[in-house]
Length: 206
Image 1 (cartoon, rainbow, N blue to C red):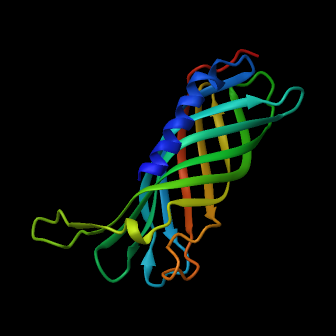
Image 2 (image 1 turned 30 degrees about the horizontal axis):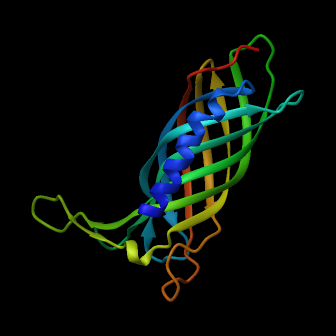
Image 3 (image 1 turned 90 degrees about the horizontal axis):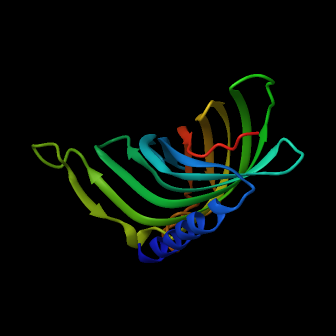
């Protein structure tokens, strides 16, 4: 946890102390959503819902319809066992680096966008919860952090609809990195479909 947390904290400090103050920043804001995930190459498991939350920053590419966006997120991945009440929860600090293409609609507050790009992730929590573990239904939780690699990476792509300062999005992430440590891995990677909503806090006037 400590290594990922340090990296995330440094990136967060840089994000707010340098980049946000630059004149070419088009907007920054808050983002949250639901992450519906599953681990690939694992039999007899179902999708599970988790949360994502964090901040975003967008930089316009002058004289084009393109922009660059980076985000700092906390994202939950994992899956649910089909034959029991066990749920695997893997939580990462995630930093996407996205290229966005905006579709201009003159005299409209609506702004459709498509985007894609790589992401880097840093695992800081990994647990299995057995929700059927006791009478109260609170469940038993055990750590599996020693089984999970610290780092993750992959590709993210999606679409977003801006309505004034609000951003409604749909995105898919596919991991490139096997999530389990050597000797335990059989090609398992993170996969997820996310529904997001964001709000721009300083949208630049064009």
